[in-house]
Image (cartoon, rainbow, N blue to C red; front, top):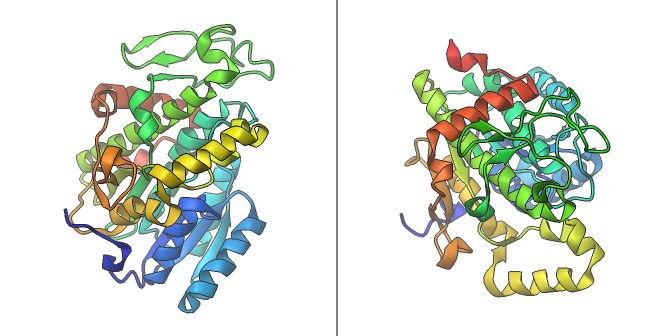
Length: 344
């Protein structure tokens, strides 16, 4: 594909776009360009004050977007908050044309979501799984809806082991006492117990990678199910390469270690790209007419670290439909969001 830039985006006047994590980084840049091209842009953010600041920044750059940019409070680490946000949105609009599942947490200090799930998996995957499902009626009310889900290069090294069962505060046992962790590589139940390497705090980086693998599996499975149901919805996964998003600087490692934070900034400057360019894959996936769903888009440069968007490499596990189907079914159980519209 040619060296695409956001200047080639179509006029989005009359379309409704929602971006999670829109208060900063890639999410902000994605929302900015969608608004610049005429979309009514909904900033889905955890902190309404930061969302309001992002709105002011966008309308300062794009005065024509005044009245077309709105803040939608939602905490992806809370299933109740997600349900409330979907209900709020149903009162605001009859349809959503574009949903960009962008928000994420990386190696946080906190350990669990409001509902007791491991924080990265619970926010990055389960939160977006639940939100997309709750918004499905609004998406299907659009003529040609697109769901864009942001994954990561880190998915390539991830092991498909998930903790779906909410855990207690001391992380010693699932709430129900029943181990439901699933090793999707063999589709056999396994239990990750305290003391196991996967349960230790220094493996939070690995958990982040697993959450990003889950994002990619979800995006492709959603597209398969939509096509099977003969629906017009297209689901596309993307990754931003190595972008200066601020996500790494918000990790527990970098917050508590200035050396690590400084090194990360140097590496980003040398090999990465700006958050504005990091948003290009999301914008391309959300708007380009030559994409039909199921694709994985990322930067075209060396190692997919930077550059204009193109089709990206995905791991063998990410391409495994059986793995994706098990992840989907377990996510339905964990969130209580059933995607009934896909089975009608």
